Length: 207
Image (cartoon, rainbow, N blue to C red):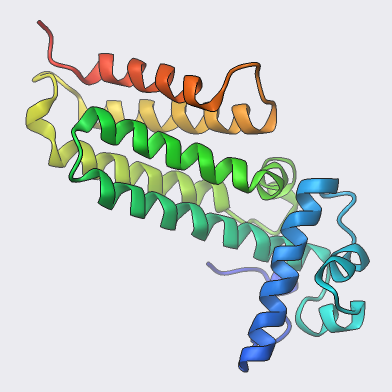
């Protein structure tokens, strides 16, 4: 993903030690975002969390937003990778079980990355046009469409695949974000079961 110059790393880490330091900075920033939010995530606090000096951080990142952009890009990559794994595993399952597995994977990644997720929602418009939510949305759309097409003969004969893909991706993503950022008094398992039942009812052949 292309970033604006001010959000791009100052230099690309080439040695293993440098790569490890950058990874440590990004992981530390994710933890600070989860604990303190964007406003509380100063570069000094991120550097302290990573166990390095602020000067070491500035060798690789020009400012806080550059670090945050790297965190958001990492989050997007992790979600895509997790969904890819879940989709591969689901190919050997019945479609009802597969649907629950894909929903569970989405909720789990969101919960594990609540700090970056909140930052995407609150600050995406201020981070130079970063499009992590758009990237994730497109990938989830592609994966859902792929699964529905591959199992088309198991669903209701009048199913509109494109409409169903849009509805399921939009509903699951918005509810997952809402659930993680503003948790309701409902367990994750119950939430996933209710959502899966709703989708199953939509997809199932009648009679």
